Image: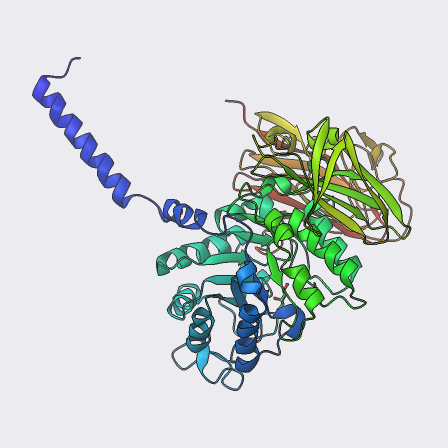
Length: 567
Ligand code: GAL
């Protein structure tokens, strides 16, 4: 049927008006959030945080002296902008009106005054809180005070919030739910505030931390020794927290959203010396990690200051292209990382973690180059000349390294290919076996795919299963169902080959542990327990966390699969 001219015009006008109203008033908090969020932390945040050196022992004097030292030492001018007060600033109780308030003995002038002082130094003000009912130091948390607390922070001039997760298991909210609340509350304040998720590395890259925050932890706490430094780095660059096929978490980072392997221990390393400090700092720089110094800036040595402020090393970290460096070689002791830069060159880190001195060679084919290339030493700030086909860093002692820039300015070099969605998410209709997907987060032992833990066929109660996940001991593993599955099905039980007296328990969670949304719980099972069938609704599940707990016990998630109805 044809519409008459004037009638058609009025319909058009109504549609246009409705559309305009929709754009102005229906624009969801989500869209606003996104717009507001994306402007911040376009390069990894840089600053200082009180925790690593002072723990909860902070006060007005120390913080003001630190602000002064950030300026006097040249840290601020080198890019360290945020001065963050970690746990320990709060009074033990909220005030009579329920507002957060600073510990009156430590901060007699209150937090607004501290913020003003920090701002007067040309720095930005960061603060710590916790999404549970208490902080890790058992001071008042923000649970059930979310908007009031974010409004308080905004009124104090806060520019950066580190939101921790102690005691958050009892909130009854998924991490995505919790952090979306904070994102909305922050947006409502109208103040641009960076949100740093501190969830001990429980998979924010997997469940969508990117939509809520500018950075998320990939690890537990860092400690001042190299084992811990390397462990934290590996949560972001290796297979400590994700399937090895990803080659680290680089594909989840970029401008406005960063993997955070925790704050710097440069200057605190117990048997600290330049070589360790440089290895730590170089790793954080090549990994595009947030650079939050954690040492006492008032007393740091010139050597430590020179490391933290090394201009060409920092430039690698702050490169606007925002590619997280990734490994191109790792033999267990020797590692090579590559980080293609905006200007067409690429930064390469050659690092010897092993006990013996070594030569490490990067060949140009590993970093997308060929022929004769310019090489510059970024620590020494010196051109090393042209090198054909490769460069060798000679005689590197343990923790020794070279950080070089290779190539000439021009077209940016290609970034590596990310792992395609269908390799790690449910994307297709029908049936997807979880053992055919790459897991997106793990802690503890990794299950064996389609075999029991001894690489024999999965067998429960005399029945052999071709597919499934074979666990031993504690296996926690997350798969991305991507809200594209209707049901999750499996048969669980201890493997017939297990003859001990131990017990094992199988639980499936929606997302991580924080929401405590247990979708299935087998209870303790022993070798005589009959297998249990799982057939649960997972339509609301983006990430499915499978947890097997047992001491050296062999437990199987046999036939574990997700189904998505065929239309
Ligand atoms: C931990 C957090 C540390 C520090 C500490 C404060 O949970 O990972 O970085 O903030 O709490 O109590």
